[in-house]
Length: 462
Image (cartoon, rainbow, N blue to C red; front, side):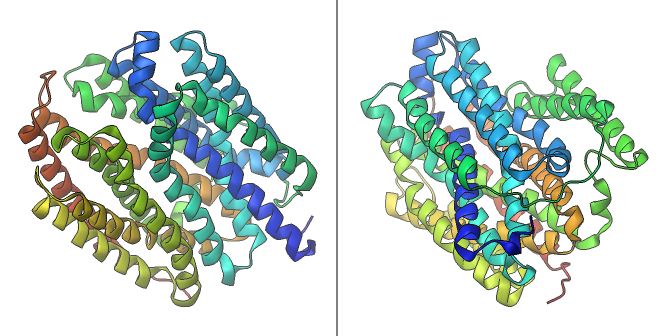
C-alpha cells in the first residue's frame, strides 16, 4: 500500500504506534542501570558481570541492525513490526521471572533482538510516510525517541527502584508492550515496498562474528586494556571478520547491507559526524550521574535528577531541530549544535569541581543536550535525503550500525580517562575521580571540535 493513500488520521496513528514501539525499545536499553546494585545482591554477581545486562543488549542490537535492511525488503511492515515486538515481549517476560542471572541475560538478549529490528524500521517508516520536504519534522520525532529515551531511563528506574524491587521495571514495560502489539495488529499497514531478495548466510555469519567480537572487545577494553589476551583476540577477530563481511557485500548482487550508499559523499561525512555526536550524547549522559555520586557524594536520586532537565531540553529541541531542518537544511543547524557542545564541554572542563553548585552542572547539561538535538537527527536526515527511496532502508541500517559501534568506541575512549584516574582501588577517591572527569570532558571537547570541522564539508541541495 502507498502510504499517501492513507488518511491523515491513519498516517498519524501509524507514526504514533511506530514511535511508541521504538521509544519503549530504546528506553529498556538503559532502564536497568540504577537497578544494578540490587541485582548484584540478589544474584551474587560482580559489578563487571552485571554490566553485561547492558552490554548483551547492545551487542544483540548491533548484530541485528545490519540485517534489518534485508528484513524490511523481504517482509511486510506489519508482519515485521509484530515479530519484533513479540520478541521484545518474550524477552521482557523471561527477564521478569528469571530465576538466575543467566536467564536474566537471556531475556535481555531476546529483548535486544526485537529492538535491533525496531529502530531502523521506525526510521524507514518515517522517511517513507512523509514527503521529502517534511522529513526534517519526521526525524525530529525520531530524535525524541533515540535521544530522549536514554536520558530519562535512569531517573525513571531510580524512582521505581526506591519503592519496588528491580523486577517491577519489567512488570511496568510488559503491559505497555502488549498494548502496542495490539495496536499494531489493528491499525498498522504496509509502508515499505517488498522486493525479491535472497538471504546470504555467509554474510549473516560474518556479521554476527565480526560485529559481536568487535563490540565485545571494545567493551572489555576499558576494563582490561590491550594486555588482556581475550580482549586483544576478540578485537583482531572482529576486525578481520568484519573485513570479510564488507568484501562479501561488494561481491553480492543483492547484499544484506548495501554498503554502496557510502559512495555518496554527503552520506559518508554524515555517518562519521553521527558517530561523534552520538558518542558525545552517551558519554556526557554517563559521566554526569557518576560525577554527582562519586565525586560530589550526592545520592543516586540526584544522579538521576541531574539528567532530567537535559532530557526535556532534548525532547523540545529535537522537535524544533526538525522544523529548522525543513527550512534551513542540516549544515547550518548542525554547526550551531557543535558550537553549543564546544562551549558546554569546555565549561564542564573549566568549571566542574567537588563543590560546583548542582544547578550549574544541570544548566550546562541542558546546553549540551540542546547542541546534540541540533545535530543528531538533522544530520542523519541530510544524509538519508541524499539517497534514492529504494536505498533508504540500507542507509538507515548503515548509519545506525555506525552510530552503535562508533558510539560504543567513543564512549569507551572518553570514559577510559576516568578509569585510569580512578585506579584499581576499591575505595573511590573523589579528587582522583574529579581529575578523571575533567580529562574526559577535555576529550569530549576535542570530539566536538572534530564534528564542527567535518560539518563544514557538508554540501546539500535545498
